[in-house]
Amino acid sequence: MDYLTQATGKGEEEVVGDLKGEIFYNPVSEEWEHRGKFIAGNVIAKRKELVSCLPDLTDKEKEYTEESIKALETVIPEMIPYEELDINMGERWIDTKLYADFATELFGTETSVMYFDVNDTYLVRLQGYSPVAYNTYSVRNYNGEELFVHALQDTVPEITKEIERNGDKVRVPDEEAIQEAAAKIQEIRTRSMNGS
Image (cartoon, rainbow, N blue to C red; front, side, top):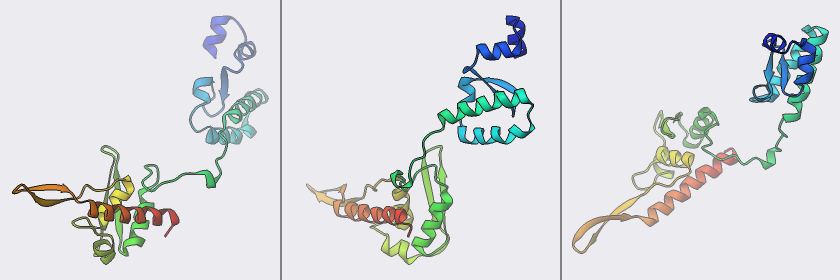
């Protein structure tokens, strides 16, 4: 603000009036901020923080801050009703602890789930033996841990089988096993969304 008042030869109130709607007072930093910076980020938290500053401000600062709060209120997004939310298993923003808790309940043994954003993959590890993971949620050489990872990533494993063709052994997709795996993966995803 000092720069603007010196460069224009105007007083602070006149500069603020000229730039109304383009600059906003932030009492937290005790500085004026450009609209592009001020009305960005978590505007709900920023509004709450500004409101908490009001009792400690001078009359002029309070007036500027109230204008800043009004500006933030105009850009607060509308709340989306819970029924309209489409949350799927494997959403990257969901804490992996929730997935680990669900896997622990599903498999009946302590389970850890880790997410690696560098290659967008999950790792699921059982901390003990689980008949559910190795029998109920097992298809060919894929066990519950691996199918759980596919459920998180909303993918289906490429399962192959060896057959003889023209005297040679070749690997081809095992459609039956792929369908069985897809059904078990879908069951895991459905159970996760139903909370059981």
